Length: 141
Image 1 (cartoon, rainbow, N blue to C red):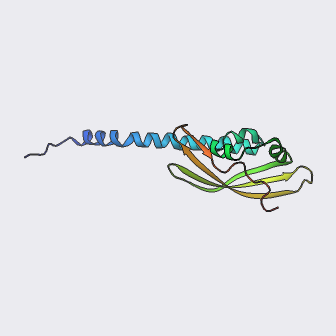
Image 2: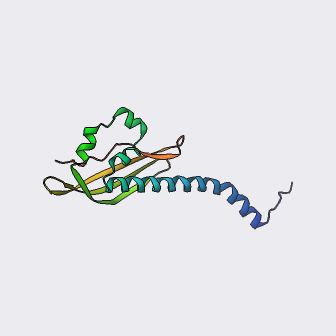
Image 3: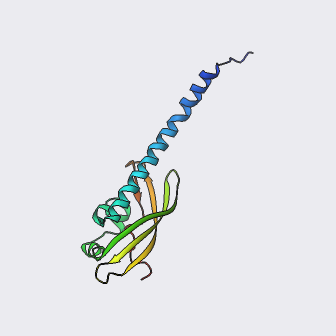
């Protein structure tokens, strides 16, 4: 029995047609992560904690509802810097190490807080959620 031979370009096209759809979805998911992280970073950096709260995993928000007092506490500080210092991303989870500069509006004392963002891909919603709530800007105090 003779095995049919395919021209190399045709074989290459066939292999790419099977491989590229997976790359495209992974690329879209990666792009969605970058967009979500950018939106989160901007919201935190500019003290829009209500906006940042909308990017928190709905399961976390249900289990840990925020109230007006929580948001008033964030109004007592000003974020002065937001810098990524490391991270890693998988297909369904991502971690990002962040260094946040914070100034207390009353004492004008500045400090730096380290924070780990944990992200989860939600295939049903087609988006990434941050899983740990708003950053603890009082860590170590």
